[in-house]
Length: 81
Length: 373
Image (cartoon, rainbow over the protein chains, first blue to last red):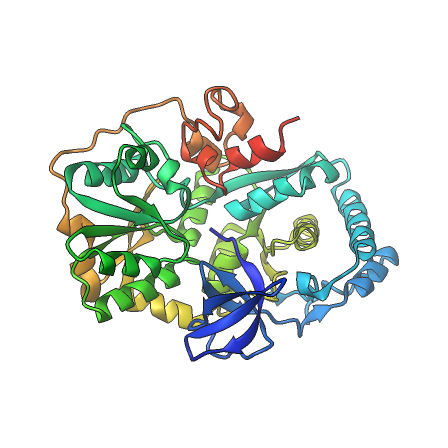
């Protein structure tokens, strides 16, 4: 079951628990014991009530840049580092 | 192993629909260019990918000569008939409650399904978070419960966490049935069987979040097949398919991670440690694939006291009734769901004959819901 939801942590309660934002003012208590480095403001992938990863966009490339590269047949976005 | 830069596609970044449309148009054009008039077969292992591919109608915008075949990546679907019958018999023979999550309760065994037993007044509960099972057991200390643990590597850490809590609380009335399975061994069995000629494989995104993209390297190199790990947004999937096609055409093999947002090379170390605090590797019985050594998880010695199979051994042998359900063949990618004689006739989501139609990640359910035209 790969179903996961990206959620933003709005409050860390303790090392195991946090509050995540669901939208429209709703929140969800999630277990963050699998992502101990998660901080307030981080987005995490949540599966079965637990965060399994901190969503990292450091290596991400802007979608608009990708579109340009595709159009110009000059694709660098999928090159290895 | 090569890393691939990932596109910043997380829904939180609020790309306008115009940009998303443009991206889709450009990448689909590139895919069409790459595919040309040759035929390619790629397999998406993960049931959630199967479901999302169908839900976003990707097959209708991708070239027809690029075939996306579903694999066995649906934990409910690959639960064997024997295991379903064991759980049913467990409930019938003992006065206990069964706690599980998801669609397993609708899967028919030889005699009945768990949801049928629930309708007959048996104690069958479905939870979203396995930790809820502790509250259930604590509020009924005179009743025994069995928590049925289904799931691949993505879900196992949550169950391990639950079991550690069960042990800490010294609960005496909550037992565990481990039906957990590991995805790389099943992938190898599939590739060994050579039943379907695959040009490339789409690797599971959240399983890989736990086990790491490195877990697929040996397979990619042994079978000389390109493996792309993919996310679940439609743009993630189109991007992943594009990269996979490129590798297939360039005759490259290896593992490429297009879901860098969530998947790291080493996976989630904390989750992996947690798994092996509670479980150890065992063989497992996969519907459609048979018994595969080292492809399952059982409770280790520290947690054996919670093993439901030891505490509630069956008093009679289970004889599995043969049915016309061809879920096993669908899981191996040998037939498409609509090639099963029962599909959309005797077998529909309202009256499923097998788990592939029951589970929200089953191929038959995905095809029935989204691909019927």
